[in-house]
Image (cartoon, rainbow, N blue to C red):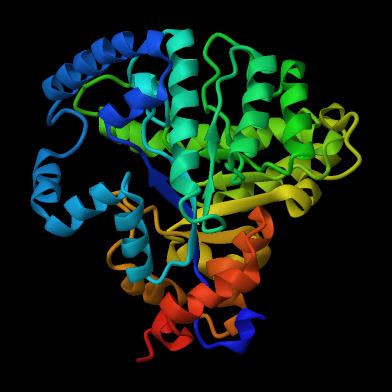
Length: 390
């Protein structure tokens, strides 16, 4: 069965998030870490209360908390029944799930608080176990992304193997910051890249991490303007450190960081590669940076801005995977159709719409297209609805 045989579009969101309530996480932690977690959680809540209005616009936050649809979305972060109801009401058949926040603060915003490495490790393991349980409620529809730490690479390798075995087949989220450890161009990470290639676990870099800019009036502006740059860095490392060269089947998925930036990056990198002045950059590389990109890189294009969609042929149709960012405030839920119409209204090719909205993600992550197509026949929008032609 193929999605082309139905007018309904199979949508797989390449960028969603999930996280448990603090009391639930406690159950997934080893006994000896529960009391320290209780203490950390109490201190964290007090710290966040003291920061009210310093990092986000308080009027927007207050409005968010009065919006019943948003509050129901928050419940969908941890409730699998509510989650699938909301995704299906938005026309989404499947998803790739990234973390909200793990016990002891692990996740995309961990830079705000310092965490003991042992606590961080156990917190992220607890998150992975919880996420696996959520995903396994409906096998095949939720590709959960595992969190790992990089303090000890042997541990990271073991946790990657464990994640795949427990049902997290969406890949591995590498931290954007490596703390006191070398960055990802360093040979210490070779065993991690090798096991990810062997297990067919894509590696993810996701926007959300940056240095702590504090609570100065310009802090939020600094964060928003620079956060995507930090997420881009994994691509730079994988090119020049020869990671793509040594692991030709490894996939790098860059999410929630836009996509049109890659065009200038590739032009610059290819120029360096072919330049006599910088020819040593490419020592040991058998291809141009743009060729590694073509072979191994993809974008989880959260919400996919119309500008990026307009450059889809230059970026690569097969590189783009649309995401709703559910249930984040800046995401498309519960107004996904309006967002899709703004982006895809002028895309004339049915196949291009289908690829970006679902087929590309199915190929990258290994979704069962036939099974997902049956779900799409029930919940997916028509091509006309996606384009706003009804």
